[in-house]
Length: 81
Image (cartoon, rainbow, N blue to C red; front, side, top):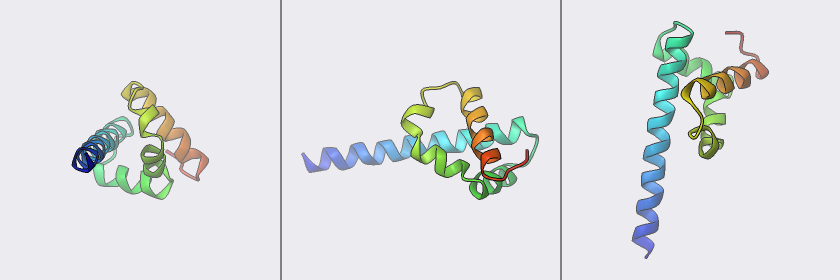
């Protein structure tokens, strides 16, 4: 039973990582910046922390809505894109 739980946790983390990468790439496209710049901006302004903490809700939204949420979180934390 323990092995199944560990596998579920690993699968959740893999899904979360893939989702976060997809959001970073989409954010970069929307704001016409490089992927590394998007990552740095989202990290600096707590966007990645937000995605990690709210993954269960955010991944159910459209990607566009998730990007809007990320932008709002970053603005609320000093971002200006």
